[in-house]
Image (cartoon, rainbow over all chains, first blue to last red; front, side, top):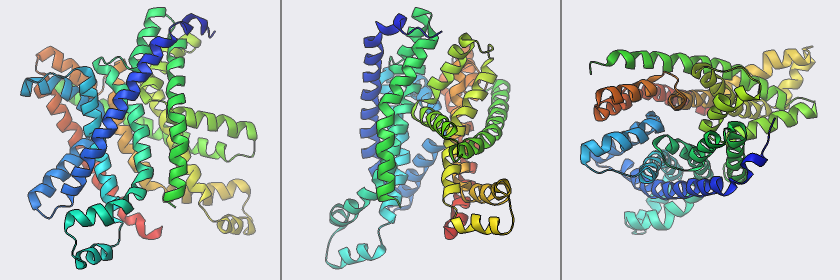
Length: 216
Length: 211
């Protein structure tokens, strides 16, 4: 029933898609990690409106489906602003904004887990906020943040498949079009799933090890 | 916004399919957890493979596989509704299975031994002690997966299940008003999901002191 020889010659076609999946995922993770930190710090600000807006950002992006966000950026944003983004940039921006909201909460709980006494001690020896964040709080928070960060990376890898819905030719898109092209959806989609598995599984094993090491 | 009717139907479908999938996955997750703790090695290996496969591949790929590939492997032709429901249940069962397994392992041995000492059979211990405790202890995680599931149903629009996201795309094309429609839909999703996450936070807080 399975006849993989028929799609074997299309391996490069699928692997290029996998490359694009990795590229969009890495770019999104970078955006998510940087923006997430900014949002987390704003969320903990003492200025009311700043705190509120950061909180709203987190709630909105966590309470709506990623697909709805991607559709909005792809179809609605150009009308509102006149800026049209390619599927690649839409995907990167969408996944980046989405993961930033989740990572902001991850960072925040990592930072809040550091005992209050350390904040007070740093202040007492005359550090300003930037210094105490950079030298005392963030270096310790990193280790607590690492396991959920690894989980987020795995989520991004998988969620990037949704960008195929707006026409980016990443792995899922190519797997689907290969199925249509060769009239062999079974083999094409199975191969696609296996490539995802091969990419994600090592990260899943690593994430489990991190969870065991730092979160027990 | 004269097109509220298809969107309302979409909301109803989203809620319906999420609820059915959750019920299926609660049973499925429990079955997976029990199979992974079973004394038969084959059963353990099979469910381990199933869990890892469904947790490391994108939901969309699973959905496409079930919708396009499964019927050709001799399965029945599936409607977008049933394919979506099956995919959601299989996906979520893998995640919940891991959670319930961890929940059952975390129960101190003494509790199980006390049950046996009281004359419970192995099945009774599972039914009356292990499973209820595991369910209770992992309640926050179950609710958090429910919220993920609720949002994940939007992916079903890609194979044409007539839930909220699908209706939105249809209305956006019909009216040439993607800005209003997609903004409206995002607001609808937010209004439906946000109260759930508030409830989830409450449950988390309630659970914390016991851990």
